[in-house]
Length: 425
Length: 108
Image 1 (cartoon, each protein chain N blue to C red):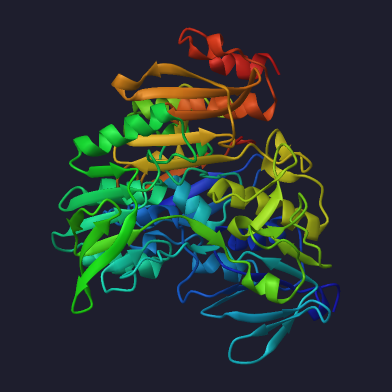
Image 2 (image 1 turned 90 degrees about the horizontal axis):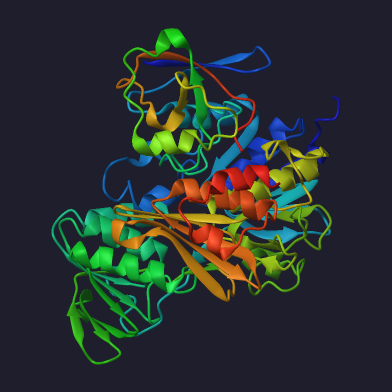
């Protein structure tokens, strides 16, 4: 029977980007044991980022979102089971219990359970017409709401809220309500917030910042408006809540196998949790970042990188193909990066949005193409690019290799960033 | 159905049937073709779907846009002035009915 026995099974819980990538990478790295990929949602694994963009604007339909073709799983001997939930993990027995009874033994368990919507808890939040946007089912429901002109209130001026506001502005009256003094305040500098807010307002979106939501008003169970903290009421027949996510750590916490689940399942740089044979990757995991501190990323590139490193550890290979220089250095997590498309605004962020003491602008915000270079104690810390992907690509190289540049150089358009990123290594 | 042939550096190749409207990048990712990443999801913003189009397949392809042009300069493998394209910008049934590309050895 060889080595491919039941006793070598890898069970992946969660069939989002991180889970699918883990299963795929295991085969790429030569893992021959059985692989079971369990997804709670009824549909085949799909890409989430387009839900708030091309899917909502009907540029793509559900079948255009699939992460991999059906043949992909079959060809690689990956047992994909959709619509299956894991009810419990029994780490001492190396088994998971499935909904509807039955269990599955594992040698390695990979938790890729993702994140859940942070719920809005004000009165009226359960009214018909209050939507979220994380799953395909939620996106389908929202798209259905938007088949005729609506008065739409978006609660939360983060990536998701602003992305959908940009799409919905064509055909609907849209108001964005953000509790912080500016949109995307946790992740971008004021220059970028100001630029984005102005762009959304030009599109006809009303952007209200520094404003909380007191309650959602309804008639006969249906949303009819949103009452703001200041007392003003904004008419609404659809409310979309985009106020962030919390890691889906319930299974891990109930199993008692990982400590410190509040912000994410704690792992080492390969995704190993405190329990033997149990890994965690993607939005649910808190892994050591480039500086060594634990960070929980909600990003596709982050999920892919973590999946690769966990798969490499399970398969027992060193490095991962198609990383930096062909083989990624498994000891050095890649530079985190994020993106958001809001209408004509294509925003990319390289590095973590942490404290900085100086920020310089490269390019011209008025022309809609610029980057903000953040420095901390003289060192480059993060770069936000609006419609300047070339700056973003160079920034990732500069950050990955800790190549020094000065704020003055960064701000000078005649300074060749790309050459610096390669020549100064 | 439109067809895409991906040639790898090791001499192997993949042949993928791509429904009309599918990009060279998406067809590779969904079909599990090694060496094409598509990190940004197809927005011409990451240059990890760089391919070299076979010379005899260049005729009829859409012109390189300004965005694509900039990103091709950022590709990990060297740019070929004629043959380099981003896979996310070439759509089956629109740019081609059949295309053959060489996959670079590195994308990042």
